[in-house]
Length: 171
Ligand code: HEM
Image 1: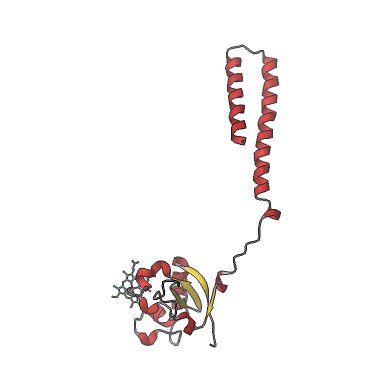
Image 2: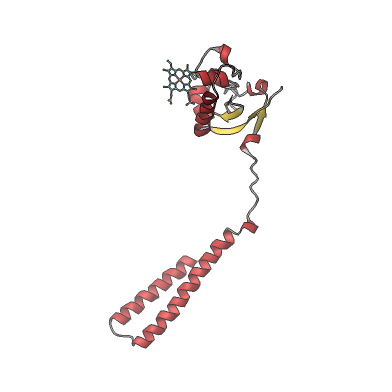
């Protein structure tokens, strides 16, 4: 509707300009029309911006119902082991540095046929941080592992995948 009104306004302006250019309109009449059309355009602009304000009125916005990404999954290592991609109804998750990431987007790496399937459903800060495919390193034992190496892995997964939760301790 606003678009239609603006189009009409522009048509009127064009006609006025054409008439003025042909000296068909006295200057005083032109000045009056400029004021009238100017007021009309201003009312249109305030009308459109008012609607924009109404749309973005914070009092009318619903509160964001999405919880913190860290609370989507809170799993014990034994529960995490179900998220390997073997069950197509579940995402593929892995944990590093105590965080849980959804690596479903990397199913070609972590899915049942992927080269890194041993990391799926696994709390394996150790293996990922020292770059080991040895099943004995599929755990969170950080003895002899540098903090920087673990942080580097957390950064890699944070940048590439969705952080969805944290690993539960003492279970
Ligand atoms: C001969 C040794 C290896 C080769 C040639 C190799 C090759 C690769 C390549 C090419 C990628 C990138 C794939 C892509 O972005 O399309 C990759 C990613 C990866 N590699 Fe290796 N890799 C080797 C050893 C290892 C080892 C020992 C680990 C053990 C931790 C490992 C863990 C990973 C992981 C976790 C990724 C990231 C997958 C992702 O993007 O989510 N790789 N590797």
